[in-house]
Amino acid sequence: MKKIVNSIALLTVVSNVLMAGGDFVTPVEPEVNIPEQEVVMLEDNVKYDGFYAGVATGYMQMREAVASDSYAFTLLAGYYFNKYFGIEGRYTQSFGGMTVTPPAAATVGTMKNYGLYAKPMYSVTTGLALYGLAGYGKSTYKTNGVNYTNNGLQWGLGAKYELANGLGLFVDYLKMYDTNNYGALPYAGNVQFDGINVGTTYTF
Image (cartoon, rainbow, N blue to C red; front, side):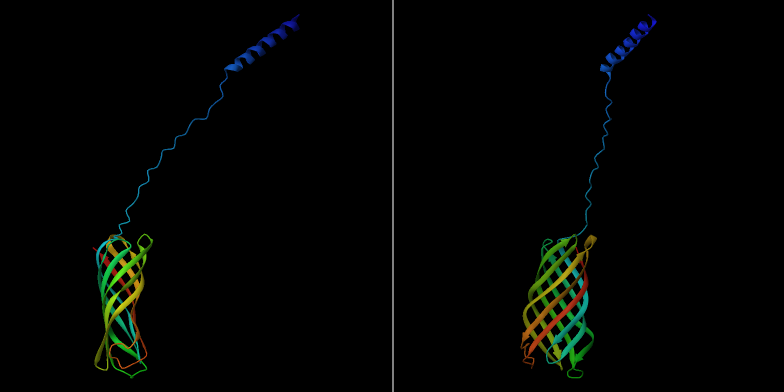
């Protein structure tokens, strides 16, 4: 009899537990809210348009019956309409000692050039651009005490990097003449007149 009573009690406890199981609630993981970070765009402070001026130093060379080489300085000014196009005026003149090859074949005084150019640009990344120069200029070559001049189309290629607040750096190559019969120069062969420049600009 005692065994029967114990069995009934055990069944009663088990039944209560099973019935109570219907009230169990599966635990739910708490929802974690991550606040959204606001993205702030910083100004690059690069000036892509406006008037600008600059100065450069470089190397100027003339190839005719002799080869004349000299250091040179360049003054320039222009206007950027946007980051893709501008116009530019330049004046370049040789300075310092002149190297003439073959030696003592001629006495070369100065080499000069000034011109006005269209300046198309291709933006590579922020501030960095490749550009071309195409326009009209006048070059002067003084040898043996006589000035020889030529007017004509001129072109060039370069790269520039605009720093913050208007300051910029550039390097370029300018072809001032490349054909026969430079002015009245007594030489019938091909004449080449060109230069390389490294300088800085400021955009207002």
